[in-house]
Length: 468
Ligand SMILES: Cc1cc2nc3c(=O)[nH]c(=O)nc-3n(C[C@H](O)[C@H](O)[C@H](O)COP(=O)(O)OP(=O)(O)OC[C@H]3O[C@@H](n4cnc5c(N)ncnc54)[C@H](O)[C@@H]3O)c2cc1C
Image (cartoon, rainbow, N blue to C red):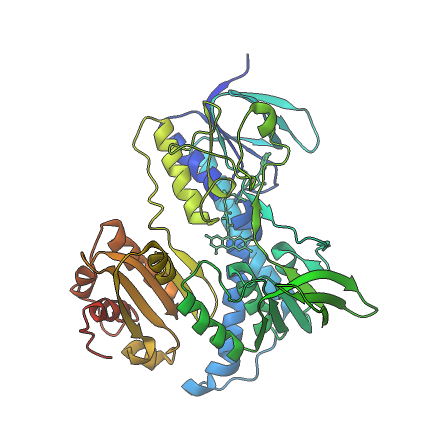
């Protein structure tokens, strides 16, 4: 008689492994099923971690190339050893994925290697690449199978010349001209990496703006800063095909509304138009698990699918496709299954673009507040007026605080500037506690810090910023 697990989690990305660990902490007998050789999913293997390693290395290269002399540090012009930079990236991946192995072992989680398929509530088939298929008996199942690259109609991704984010993380040579299709987070982050390493970067975007979904004022100003970093943008344009030429690639581009086709030559193309939920081979339809028209698994507020005892979290369900959102859902679903009060506050999920400068946001954008007819006050503060930013010469960008006009409750915070991805969390904590702009404005902030710009933006909501 095989072991019966309390919980089996399919997929060990940030959603799945966190769920498994939390469930084990709560006393459940837990199994995970993973088809990849290493744990950590998209995030650790081909997403957040490798992209941030390359962003970090290339940002330091740019700093050494342009910023050091200004500070009185004279060094020879830095050179790129791309193979070593890729080794640095791989070390970041290995360090993190091994850490997950350790944590799963420490929490006594049983690992099944292979592709999981749900046979019914309580039964998961695991098919290893080679070896015997096993059936895992389990009381509950959590699906955490994540997402995959969204395909572009009429274009074949060969991961050599036409690459997805996965291929763009392992190019063997800096391309002369990289065309990025899609001006979302992933396209702009990976475009930044290769631009800093020396590529000419052209971004082709269907919409008339970059970073769809983020605050449009931030996006507009950020586009100008990227143009200063030698990015070229073709907005309101659609790629209709990519042909291999004798040398390089020929990209057919049309106005988004239709019209005359023009051709753009490139050495490599990165297709970064988004991601789609991954449920292939999981047996959802056969098991009666309902998906919406975008292929995302439908879940109730407690993450249970249309089949009792089967739950889903992370990129495969509704909401932003972000690692920390998947992690928080992993914790919440484990707690709910254990009879505790698991909860995710979808109004306070920060989003960060790890470019230079960084962009970070939490809560509503001005565009969303306008569309919802919510009266709000705005407080803005430029880094140009912040002492630490001036000392560091990182004065690009600003902080914007949006507060309810009636109650002063903070509804959204948007930051463009150095370390925005770290600064945003004081806003997230404040919002989690339902804090007001005045609460933030009256909290003493250390001087000189970039965080003072957040405080001053909160003061500006009531028209009383001191330094601007
Ligand atoms: C280039 C890039 C950069 C990114 N940067 C960031 C960032 O900076 N910050 C951020 O928050 N997010 C980032 N993301 C998004 C982030 O990676 C995802 O939101 C996150 O990984 C989703 O977690 P998940 O657990 O839902 O799924 P995933 O991480 O996709 O993990 C799913 C796992 O399930 C496994 N699996 C799938 N089907 C089966 C099956 N049938 N049987 C067994 N195993 C299966 C897969 O092999 C995979 O390991 C980035 C993504 C990309 C591509």
